[in-house]
Image 1: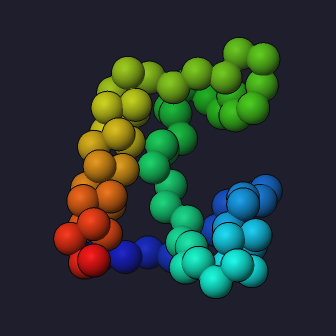
Image 2: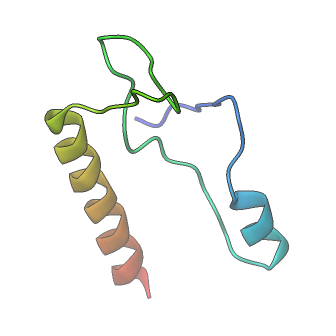
Length: 68
């Protein structure tokens, strides 16, 4: 299932698209249950979050590589 997701803030995607590169946002690392500390001095992610995010990123890279 694919669900549209909009995040606050910005990414480098607009610069990549301006150069002709397709760019899609994927929330690789999910929000933490212990509170949002994004971009703060004490920003942190759990080991489980890091593991699942890295696995998702690997699946995306392998899927894109197989298409080429």
